[in-house]
Image 1 (cartoon, rainbow, N blue to C red):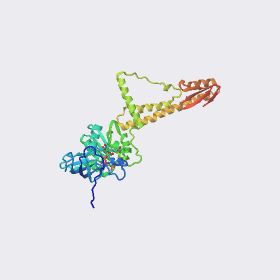
Image 2: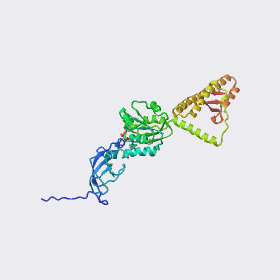
Image 3: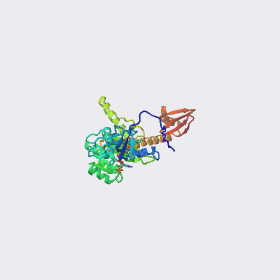
Image 4: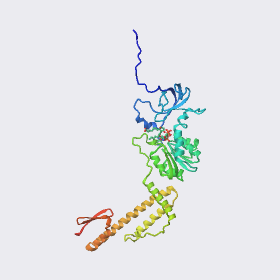
Length: 389
Ligand SMILES: NC(=O)C1=CN([C@@H]2O[C@H](COP(=O)(O)OP(=O)(O)OC[C@H]3O[C@@H](n4cnc5c(N)ncnc54)[C@H](OP(=O)(O)O)[C@@H]3O)[C@@H](O)[C@H]2O)C=CC1
Ligand SMILES: CCCCCC(=O)/C=C/[C@@H]1[C@@H](C/C=C\CCCC(=O)O)[C@@H](O)C[C@H]1O
């Protein structure tokens, strides 16, 4: 009996056959982004990742046999590829490394090194003498940023999660200060290690650690938001709060101060004392003292150059500002309650008192009833002398 071999048409011709090569993995990379990509994979898929590989066979002149290449082939020992790219970039042939380890192509000379180099120099635009904080400091990216920052003449403060890494960063990489975020109170230690505040922040971790560091940054500082590894394992990551209300208020006040300075230098204004409040019948000695204290704190906030003290003055100023407003409200209410009470039997006088409380823009007539606001309360008054508060 004769057995025939039949070659079937499996797929349609499409252009020319691909020029492929066979490569064998030498180094495979493990990176934080894999934790984020993983949900996009199906069970059974080859796990993602870059690798350094050696070309074993080739029908592609761009990838000669014996050359070392970097490709996003995933975690596998052997790969047949035509070198075309993925969303992670294309395959490329490595230059001669001499005595350098080929693993550098996945580290300092590869993706993490480039991230550190451009994320630091291009985004932070460092200047000699500045202070930089780096989180994830002992990681592939953070450890390179710290060394670049030292070479650029910066004071470098690292944040890491173990004393062993802390020692390595200080003793071998030359970081000026390293804080162990697992054992130290970052909020307390930062002012001690960065008395002039933080100018630049290279953020690898996000979340609570970043929120704390942001509180200690100087105005007009730069932040390189590189990654947020503290949230990668969380179902509901906390995220970073880049601005809180206090910051917005301080920035606004500074902006007003600065624009006032510019306007004053062009068209100086004459200072006049606004005595309006002082003339209010309920403005007494207690309010006067509180208002003076409030104004002093505001002047101290305005003139203070130290970021930590500035924040403290602003917070104290807010307490006194709110206290003055609340005390004024209470005194005003007491004043009118007394007045209305003492005019109980004198509708004419009472009506006169009420009229002083009615502002044109905040009263309304409905039928014969007038509705108006005193502070936050709606008050109705009927012309037939029906008074309800
Ligand atoms: N934007 C981009 O193109 C790129 C961004 N990245 C991002 O940069 C960051 C660092 O990457 P890479 O250096 O390669 O990573 P590594 O794995 O080398 O280092 C990560 C470091 O993060 C620290 N870490 C882990 N969990 C936490 C946590 N919950 N809180 C605080 N620190 C933590 C660990 O140090 P410790 O023991 O000190 O906690 C570890 O050293 C990642 O967020 C990554 O996603 C990386 C490459 C490119
Ligand atoms: C929100 C993702 C932040 C991750 C930061 C990071 O580590 C980036 C690394 C890139 C990596 C990007 C790959 C995938 C990110 C997941 C986005 C998605 O849509 O699934 C790779 O391209 C090289 C690094 O620059």
